[in-house]
Amino acid sequence: MSTSRKVIFKGTKIIVAERDGWEFVERKKATEAVAVIAVTDDRKLILTEQYRRPVDARVIDLPAGLVGDEGNDDPAKTAKNELSEETGWKCRKVELLAKGPTSPGITSELVSLYRATGLTRAGKGGGVEGEDIEVHEVALRNINSWLAKKEAKGVLIDLKVRAALYFCGARVSSPAPVGEKNRG
Image (cartoon, rainbow, N blue to C red; front, side, top):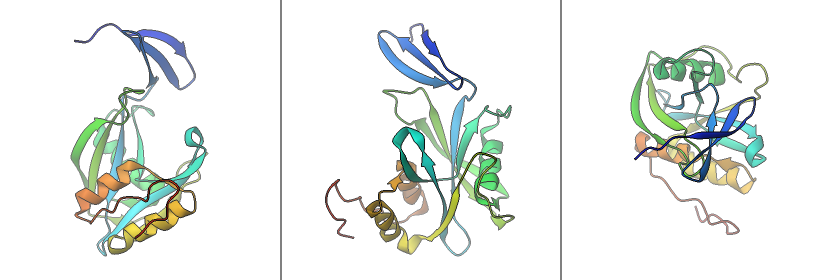
């Protein structure tokens, strides 16, 4: 089923490749990505917000990072490290919940969703040098209205956040169609 891959372009961080006439993107160093579902003892989901150049918008997301990008090839360890760096929260352990492609028509990237448990606040977060990450702790009971307010301000919501709500047992409401008001 798999045929050979031909490299078309190498950038500083990405490769554009082709297989059977189909062009796609791969990261040069990272082997996969991880995203962390972290819920505090008082049932708040820890989220990040930052400007993302490819979509030219601020995006609400889960704490996340690349496996292999900084020499660490252990996805679970990467998940723990990214949670701490981005949000200031540490965890005792992480559990793999799901793994799959993010957008298989354009990228070979796989993302693993981890659940973090045993959370303790250890710092303010915000990411490492060059990152400008805002940390949000949102009560699960208010998550849908909070997300709707963010969307109304033009902030994009990464679909991994909606997947996280499923794993948290929260009721997931659909966003309003583009151009329509969210009916709550």
